[in-house]
Length: 275
Image (cartoon, rainbow, N blue to C red; front, side, top):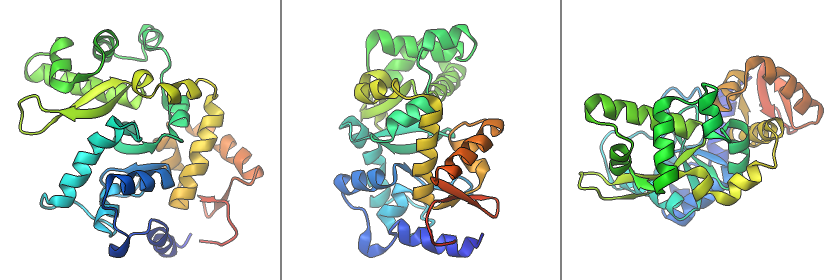
C-alpha cells in the first residue's frame, strides 16, 4: 500500500482546499451527507480515518484548534444546530468519538451498533445502572438539557458529575441517546440537550428495525471505504464494533460480491485504480 499516494487521493477526495471551504450550515450538511460520516475535529493520531468538518471549514488537512476563532465557533454551533434541525446525527456513536452521521447512514449505524431494548440490556448486564438512570429520566421526562438531566437523574457533586458523563457516553455509544440541540442554563457555554434516539430520530430508528446487524455492518463498511478509500481491518473493527472473528468472513463475503478488495493487508474500496 502506497500510503503517500493514498493521502494525496484522500486530500482530493475530501475537497480540502481554501477555494472549497465549507462556510454555511447547508454546506456542512451536504459535506456530511456526501461521506456518510464525518468527525467534528480530526484526531491527531489519524488511526481512525475520516474527513473532519473542522478541516473542511479551514480548507486544509490536519487543521486543529490552537486558538479559538470564528471557524471554531462555527463548527461548535453546528454540532448543536444541525441535529436540532434533524439534518444529521451528532454524538459519540463511532469509537466513542464525536462524529456526524448522515440520516441515510443512521439506520445502519443504529442496527449495527445500537441497543434496541434498554431494559433488557440492563437486565443482561449490557447497560450500567447509571446509564439506565439517565435513560429512564429521558424516557419519562422527554428531552432535557445536560444540567437539568443530571439533577433529575440524581447525580450530585464531583463524583456524581463524572458518573453522569460516563453514563451519557455509554448511552451515546449504544445509540440510545443523542444530542439534539443546545440551550443556556446559566453557564458560560450553552448546555447540550439530549433525547432518546428513538424519539428524535423516529423514522431512522424504525428503518433500523428492518435491518439485521450483518447487512448493516456490510453497508457501513462499504460506505466507509468509499469515503476513506482504504483502511486497515483493525480500524473497521474498532469503528463498527465488529469482533475480529466475525470481521474476516464478512470481508471475504463482501470481496466475493465485489464490494471491496484486499490489497497489502489493507481493505480497499472496490475500484479499478490501485492505491
